[in-house]
Amino acid sequence: MRDLHFSIDIAATPARVWDCMFDPLAYRDWTRAFAEGSYYEGRWAAGERLRFLDPQGFGMEAVVDDCRLHEQLSLRLVGEIKDGRPVADSPLHTHPAHERYRFDPLPEGGTRLAVQLQAWDDGFLAFLQDTWPLALQRLKVLAESTH
Image (tube, helix red, strand yellow):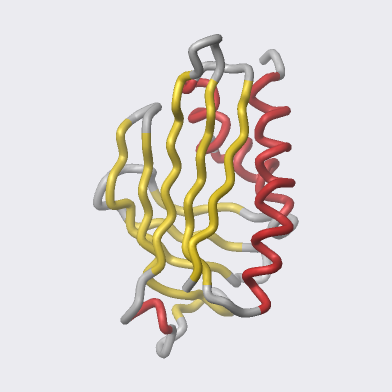
């Protein structure tokens, strides 16, 4: 697995960035970079299980390891989903991947969102390197817009 790091400065409070990142409707918007129609099932709370899915039922299962409101969220990716069902032989069962999101206030105002994740060194790695910056740019637009 390889570690990937992305960050973006957003002219909005950490609370606003957090809300835009994890709100179900806003999530569908900014994650379109990964798959049109992406959504999640579950709760963003420590110990909770989440499912990240596309409309065809493909995605990932994760457990929230740490959730500090407006500060940090850590996930452990524990399985893959195909056709809406868990993949029995997913390598994530024995070697979970991790994702971490930090929402750091900037001295001049705003937030630096830092994303750290692990990815298999395969064709999906290039996809993530290409799409995460696009997704974060869309999240920035959402968080900086007035509501």
